[in-house]
Image (cartoon, rainbow, N blue to C red; front, side, top):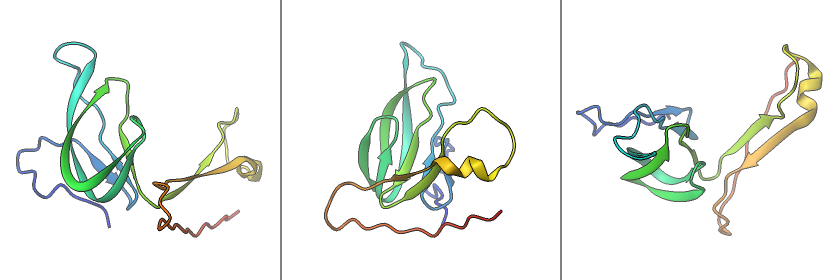
Length: 123
């Protein structure tokens, strides 16, 4: 289920969900003064990890956080497993690209946290 900011008739939230487990809230305006931008973000139900600030946030609620213009605030839902590839120096699709597959597991460290995923490698 992708999340929507249903209580936002004003359009003040500039964020979107990327599937069920990732929410992106890009910084789209420069700071009025100083380096940091104050950003109003709606956090969906559940625990979400702020990848920029390295902190867990419990939703649902609206928070105001500070980010630099070069930051890309990405929030990952607790229990998510994200496969990533190591940056390579070639363009194309090759089976060798999957030799360096990494898995990022987002857990808050509590004993009741469980995660699972299905992954399909299709050549």
